[in-house]
Length: 281
Image 1 (cartoon, rainbow, N blue to C red):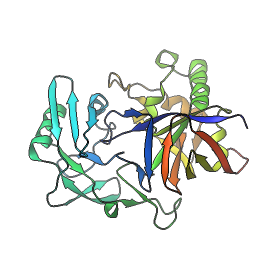
Image 2: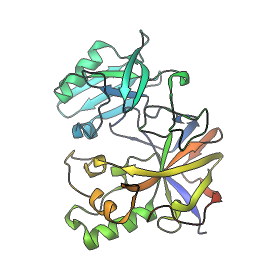
Image 3: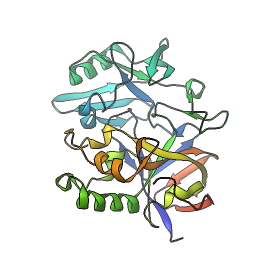
Image 4: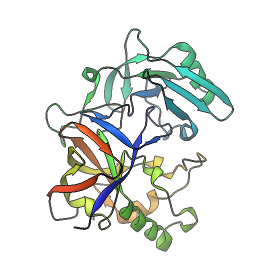
């Protein structure tokens, strides 16, 4: 197998907002340190993502040394948000109930003004409040933060190149090529053949061992231009034609950490377990 290496690492402090590009990150059992520990919920306590609010793509987030955030967006002065320490509340994240701590009223008011709708900003604190991973693909004790379903998402530049070639041939070529940030990954690797990750079962990146659970089913968020918040049809249209499994369009692989440590740009990826067959037709 040709050499495969880690070429970028991305942390999303606030679920659905802009990512931070970092050179290295600590891998915790429930995801990269600081990844998706904050979330916006609507007036009924349900998660808000770019599915409902594409303008979240333009919401810039910076982490503070104390774990707090600085939020900024077009037409809005920055808002400093400390880690909340008040009473917890229960909110809905898809099918799960999650115990979180609401941020200060001023922070939620800033977010409500930005999105022009009632919202609350909430924070996931201790690992004890993390959600269990889908038991169909997980082991007892596997947990995830506020990510959609799994601790980390890995994507491949070779597979993105192949996808963009398909878009150019039979997709909406005016919308391509699409950049990797449409898929909001944590880890991006380069090298190897397109779609080689379909056959991976366990991989080591740097000093961390990961279990590759399943391909990632993609949604309408992939059609949102992360620089403009404008929604189109690609790459979901082409993925649905060429990368379909169990009724879902697939791109990227969900990972669960099996060891502790850090990952760094430049780390070598080693496949330590492979099925030898592709997972997506």
